[in-house]
Image (tube, rainbow, N blue to C red; front, side, top):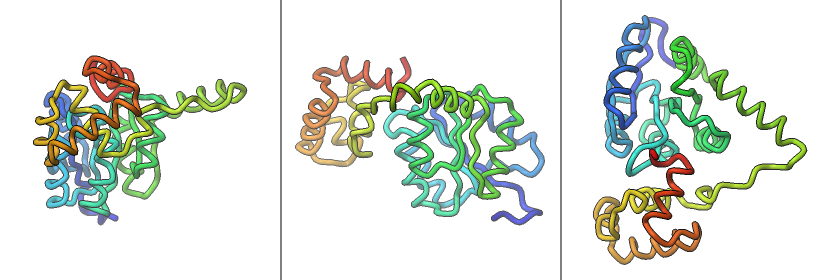
Length: 222
């Protein structure tokens, strides 16, 4: 828990530089909050978070290479006392549930009011979970509307391991097996095996099909 005379230290992770700059400017106007760093790459950010040990990481979901959801356990391992608050344009129930299950303390839509961001940071520091009203109301509406219909079908992406999700994103971006092996520091044979497993699990047999699925699941921008 941060001392009362020390500002809440925040690290921003979002692959869009203008978005990071906007949120940095917004947060730096708030008393009691200090932005200690930012990064456009989740994998690179893990080492920075381990060094800086911020109180809170504000984390986007859709990023190339490593999605925000898959980055959560790695960030928590790098800095166990750092709280994680998702800040994304994805408001779907699956993303919210996966984020909270992975260890996020809060979840905000980028369409949230600026004041909600400050509330979320302070709530996280007090050990409370926080969902922005827009996200929470969507979950309630879906729960009420789906009560008679049974649970929604699971996403095919949920079947994947974190490593498979990383490979999936790179393949969806059009990377070759060789490029996947290089980027993820694995052998070419392992990369090929991952591709085969993904094609079987996801029933996608071309880069175009993988890309369409990634866009539909919100892991890539359309």
